[in-house]
Figure 1 (cartoon, rainbow, N blue to C red):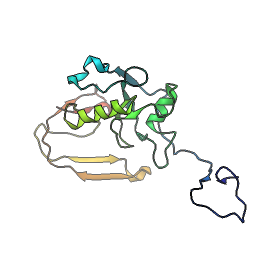
Figure 2 (figure 1 turned 120 degrees about the vertical axis):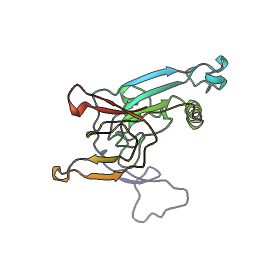
Figure 3 (figure 1 turned 90 degrees about the vertical axis):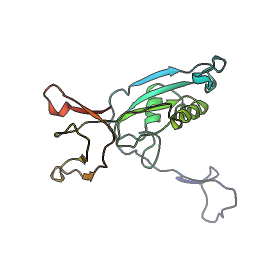
Figure 4 (figure 1 turned 180 degrees about the vertical axis):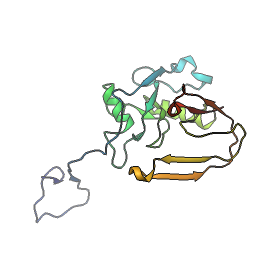
Length: 203
């Protein structure tokens, strides 16, 4: 019964016809991810259409009378949306389950790579998501990258060595590359004597 044609189990002598729907049911487990007990979110209700919106280009209303933007704190290892070996263990579905929302309530306005942690902005309607994407494309929004690093970083601009992962002896993969020359300024924040909590901020 794992293979059905139009909802029925086919017989060996049956032939496929054009337009039939073939379904193959499999036992599926998502690839594992690392998530906190609760994913942090911050909601912002957008102005109603007659309110003019931000800069006079509001996104319009959804079925609830006004769309919302959600800033979601995405953990590393979690993809933004369902893809490949990840379905239930994707950010949008995890947040929808946590907040008791119907599936496909949240529409990502952008994405972060699976191994990248940070804020992902989602909308509660496709119109609001398109509006937010438009503002991002026009440069009306700005994002800042924070890097948790180790080592001595000079105040002068120049070439930096970037590294990801751990030593091969630990059983993890390591990747190294020389970064391009930096055209940004950085500030160093001490972590109270604990080098593991020092951080490098852009700007």
